[in-house]
Length: 400
Image (cartoon, rainbow, N blue to C red; front, side, top):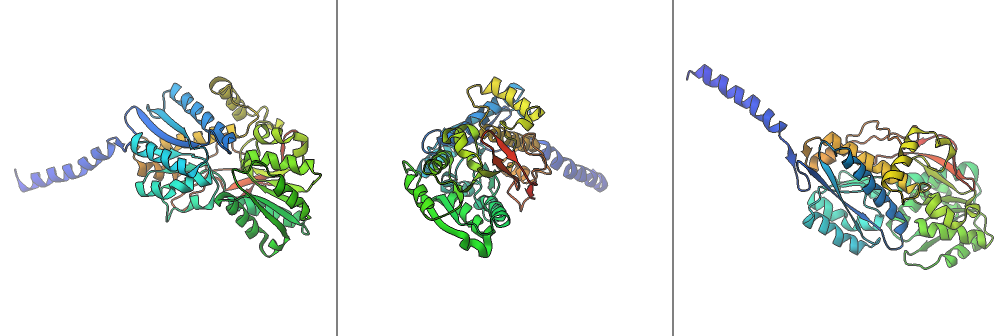
């Protein structure tokens, strides 16, 4: 073979082989030609069990996707386990999902305490902890935790929005705060104080509760006794309902702000008493299925039809079922973008490359954008007020 011919052959091999290698399917544990294993932790029992419907609606959505042929021909195997909102149980279940079930990723596991307990472990194992169902600010730290991405607006951002609204409408407020005594509650409270700035002195009382407290009677009586005329309620559904009901029953009628985690009409406001919840303020970033303005909305109609077929026992007045459905859609988008490159690194790369994504059930103007330095998909919200029957949006979409 002549030198020239040899060189031409060498160049051909150099150019062609890398392309053929790149075209091959790439898999990490949990992915194959036929399946994508996805792990999930959800409190199907325990003090935060109202959130369990999120896991159920996600499982139902993935059944719908599988019925339509799966994602790029692969069926989703969604392994959702009960951690009871217990950090110790979360560690046990996560290790089982990663080491025994060998899932490709963890998706939308719920709760700041549970996710905090496995944060270091999943990053050390380089397993995606994707779209965490918590707004703690720690989930948006790609420099130190590149395998973890949030799935809700930042609690500090949300707390700051309430602070801005109070400063604008109630500059002389006397504020009482109820908060869950863990990272979740403290993160919200910190953002709220940051939003108040030098007016944080408006807070006259900060009262914590524990997740195993049987009632909130003592806390609500103490808040009323502080003379507070504005109430920021940082609590999960069970406790949010208790707090709203108790405040009304003892004749305390402050202006109330309720964190977005507990805005469900079905699982929070109805148990509290719709009349007792009238006037409560919060924020939204996805459509409320009880709001008449969305009655003819194609996305809500599609969601309602899905609920009837795939999750008929689920409540169509529970906004948590909208949230779970929307997050499942977001994961499907990421996996579709990943194509045949189903490695954990590529999943995170695609999750950090969502550009101007408008989920059908997100509020108009709420678009998802992520990047290698921005791990918070949702950064826009709109204020809303409960009128005794449904939430009513007002003002402009705030945030990015």
